[in-house]
Image (cartoon, rainbow, N blue to C red; front, side):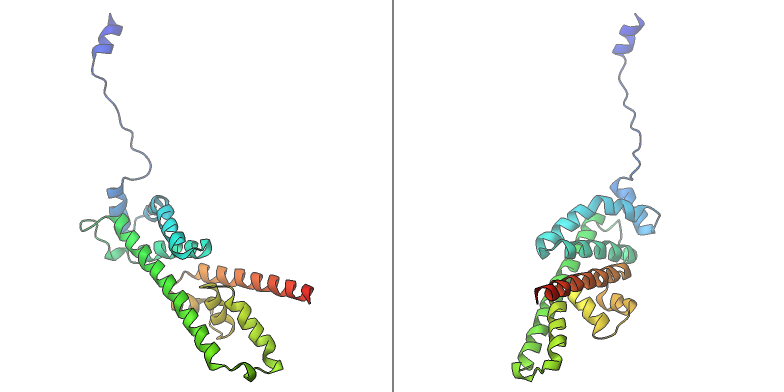
Length: 197
């Protein structure tokens, strides 16, 4: 008899709060700069930001950089986010679109710079002593943006990692990573070139 009565009682579902905050709570926590808010936002949105960047830039390395820059910019600019006025996801997607546009503009600027150098330097102006410098500049350029720009700033213009990070509006770790990867790639190319010659 008691089993039948239990079955006739309304079933009450108990919702146990999950560990991640819901989006409204995350937005409020993010705006206040609370611990863990950026991590939750990154878990939620980084796949979308990365996919947008890969589709626009066609490079996984550039997409990784744009994704990192997006969340760094969002965290640094969180005082400008008002959860009452808009959705946090939309706000971050807007930042991602600006970072993607910045990356595309950087590519375009680098291309224009290289074209200007080609036009201003006649082929017969290069002496045999300059051959290594020209080859090195060519190899650095082949690294592609933004790595080529970062390596050139570090080694041709003598800027520090911190100066490059500020100038490129990139996290310091990203700048160091680009320089390290760029040097490894240059070393590998030069080793292949030496073996071939």
